[in-house]
Length: 283
Image 1 (cartoon, one colour):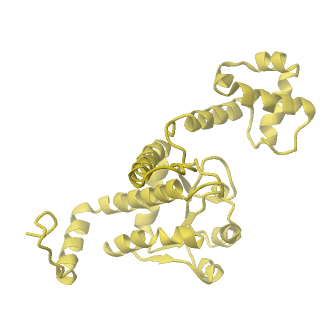
Image 2: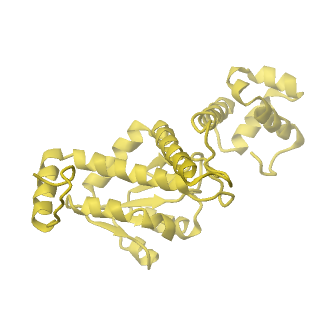
Image 3: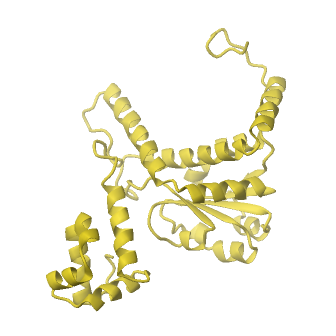
């Protein structure tokens, strides 16, 4: 909406949407046209330029996104969760609050149908490959380890990503992780993956982007952080970990009893750790 692709009358509609925000859903096209001194057809042109079929579709999407941005995160800033003079314990409390808020926020973004479809794709796949930039790939090691323990083959594609994509097929399931959804190293793999008829699960921020346009299902990450004006990626990292943990849990549940028995039996054999702490020691 901030792109320079609109006429002066269309920009009047855009400005009005940002000014009114939460009240947009209750306004008719005639009301908006009258208040912006434009014609109702101008609203339709704005919607189509933004990739929507009509005004109602744009209005609903705008209202839903605005509602999301106004929920949660009222008492914590994802970009600057603590201040310069905070004590060490204050910092700990604020980061804990940020992570708790992130989980609640991310849970509100989960769509049952997309989560169900992602679970089925992962459960049916003979091989799972994850593509992401290095920082995000670090967060995937635990997911790989957990899935491996229930017999799922997971590859974290760090090098030769083009070859990894070329070797995919319909029996492979791809997870693409990108906060912006525009990461060039990942986006350029899409034509190849689509030509190989490989199912694609995307973990990304809210809104439309290059990755979502090619995904079989999309899981939304908490979207509160700026790209670089921030102390750290506390919220987005927590969001990625939450979504991966959720996917693992959902796949695990498809064969709960067998997976649990298998995991415990293997762990008994290989895990020889002992502890004098009665809370964590095995009986």
